[in-house]
Image (cartoon, rainbow, N blue to C red; front, side, top):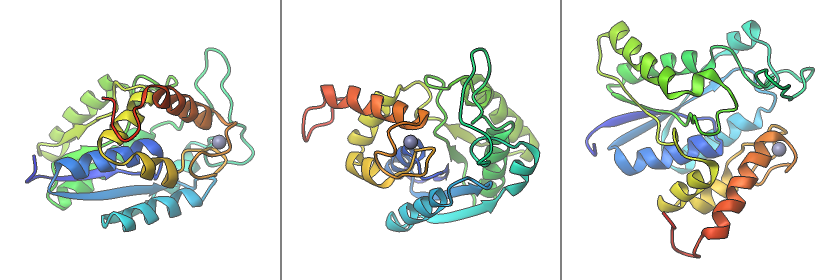
Amino acid sequence: MKKEKAVVVFSGGQDSTTCLFWALDRFAEVEAITFDYGQRHKLELDCAAEIAKELNIKHHVLDMSLLNQLAPNALTRDDIAIEQNEGELPTTFVDGRNLLFLTFAAVLAKGIGAKHIVTGVCETDFSGYPDCRDVFIKSLNVTLNLSMDYGFVIDTPLMWLNKAETWALADELGAFDFVRERTLTCYNGIPADGCGDCPACKLRRKGLDDYLAERVPGEAVR
Ligand code: ZN
């Protein structure tokens, strides 16, 4: 593994930053790819760029504004509220997002000679997003390999972790404080502990509280 190269799909949030540390721990070379799809908060892109710079990682930012054109959603449009009605997908779901992101990441990966593509998708807290499911990732992996005749491996270190376990993983990687202080998960664009009120903040906070309740200071639990 240590000789191999990986591309991390990176948004500057808790999950993908944890994945970045996970990849740095495993691979000889790591590059990050961030997609600009007209997020409400440009700060998300700045946050990703700053983290990549600090960790000395080559950072690619791709313009994916066509995604917003095709699939208007609450992450990009101020006039669409963030909500989830019973039996429906949340308004934060963007059709095709992970399919397109991972496909573009694969094209980049092959171009730079990387086989591994790391993504922070997670089925445990997946909010019903169909493109965060393990079965989708496995299916896409086969499709990508066939489409480019190349041996991609899509790595999903968070797939079966809950939010508390994701904090534990960051801690194990020596990145707990970094992830807590430097990442942006909040839908209202407030870094670190965020606004505390939006669904993303609530999920992050609950995981953090659960983890802190069992954490031994200075020593990772898992
Ligand atoms: Zn928030």
